[in-house]
Image (cartoon, rainbow, N blue to C red):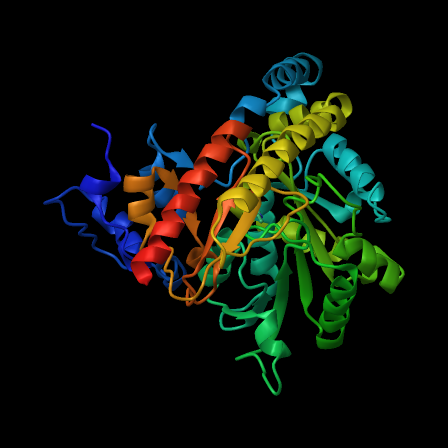
Length: 428
Ligand SMILES: Cc1ncc(COP(=O)(O)O)c(C=O)c1O
């Protein structure tokens, strides 16, 4: 039987979401284990958003919650052709163990891709990873000791916050340090930033602020982790150079840069192949490769070859297709927000990526009203508190515009707007 939100759990607040995992142990079966878990594993709560998304899968609900690419746009035929090619032309290499750092074929193409972004680099500056999530995790394990501080945007990507927590790091928003006399609780080991079309805000960091981040990282001797997951999904306006490109320019060479770039094909090809990469000084790449060896030896060579063929054959045309489709959906969402949202609600006119971030007057708690939004208004979103390091603000939400057609987006935003209007009415 399909579980509905109503008869399973009331999502009153984050704490209840956190209990979802514990509740997944069948009734009567206590989770008795004769050993204790490590501190790192105990630092990790359940992935609240993944739990939430499962609960929101209902045919009558228009969901803007999932931050995933539209599967109807996956280049399935091209992936099939690339797999056949890999299995006929290079079958031994595709199926055998290989170098931890990645296949020469893919690293060569990734170095070329990075050079096209103005970063003077070669294959030694590239590590192939299992999605960009692994690149974030390896970087944290290479640079961060338990108790160190990591500077972040506020709000920021939940998956990164989880990784930082697993290393027992103090997470401090960059903006806190901008306040007078503020200092981080411990040594700053890393700054983490999503400069292009960030998850969850959809915003881009202006070039001036990118330069500031680089200057700060250099002055204080920490690594700057650039998460470029959405950088290739620009639909409007001009590209801004990446942090790594600016840093290379500033430092004179990638080998002197403080920035480590994390890229992925999850948003632009398919997430299921799990191919991402890190690009940075070769000394960092070599250290991360040793760390990766401990964790998974290497990323699937077959998948690396598939991605290499896709890069040669369809990547650019596929990107164009994604940009066209997602941009129309973005415009449909922005138009509908303009048309239907009551005054007092704020959002940004995003130029790329997958998300729009909405801010409400302080009193409206988007965690508390989610159940009603889903049950009564039949529309779903992700409450903003999940992206806020200390989960202290509850008056934001994230909408994804990628998964629905334009007319469904218009209908969903209208439902959400009517619902918010009625919630404003309840408050007064
Ligand atoms: C900002 C950001 N970084 C990294 C990732 C991880 O993506 P993957 O590991 O699939 O490359 C995601 C996934 O949603 C993301 O939103």
